[in-house]
Amino acid sequence: MLTDYDLPPALEADLVALGQCLLAGTAPPTVLVAACVAGLDGLPAAQVVTASVRIRNALCCFCYPVTDPEKDRRRICGVLAGMPMLAQVLILHRDGHVREAALNALATVPRSPFMLAALVIRLNDWAGPVREAAARCAGRLFLQVAPDVAVAMGLALRGSWQDWTRWAPMQAACMELLFARPAVRVQLVARFATVCDAPLGVTLRYFLRTPLLDAALPMLAAMARQASVRATALQVLLWGQARWKTGTRQEWVNKSLGLDRPVPALMRRDVRQPVDRNALIATALHDRAAMVRRTALRALAQCWRDFPDLALIVPVLEADPSPTVRRWAGYLQRHAGGMD
Image (tube, rainbow, N blue to C red):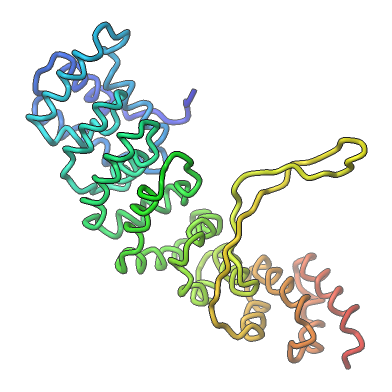
């Protein structure tokens, strides 16, 4: 059971009152619907899955046990037909038929990261007709979503939609449509470059499943404020591959004894960005973050024969504050000791 997020009491009370009106088949006061929508707009997008459970429980707390679900459904859809603004709330309803009807009626562009995330998760709905309705709705509305709302939603969900298993290429194309807009891409790159209080390195790996941000990698490797972003961009550029975790797999430790261990299962995509490899390594070796210097050294260990001034840089690295960097420097000293 999901218990890690509770709705604000005022919003929960409004949703319960709205649910009562819907069950009775009466149009709720406009001010009540507006209060529910405003309350939803204020919820954190990162909590959309857990909050959705709370929302549908509040909306339907008087509906179960259900004695005549078909009758209740007709009542709710009848109210929705006369009051389209309800669609913003009912895309989170428990009943799949109601969610489908709400998505078909939704004409309001999501104006907050949470409401956009609520529409996005419908692309992965367990009911096929709801997923199809969500894709049609996304086709109508995604091009009108404000870039800052799209970026905030994308970073809050941390690319988690990449792991969804129910959706088909039609639904996946909706997310590409959302983030491929130039204005959205520019803001997304700017956020990766400037934000320093979120785990953006892992999020960047998810976004690099597609070539959307490939052209920005040199800038991120050199200028991003967060070390994990610089290290991730640097690694992709130096190895020419974007890698991301897709789960775990079992790896044998001792097959004869039946001993194994879980290890990350990775997927890869080739990234072709023209860069000066040596210049990139040289710059990264002077980075203020040890994790960036370590990333550069792992690459340098593979191409040290072609690196200029290696004899000058190794003594500096041997005095580095990071023990791992010093070990890499020792490795280079042993293997390149005869290069003088």
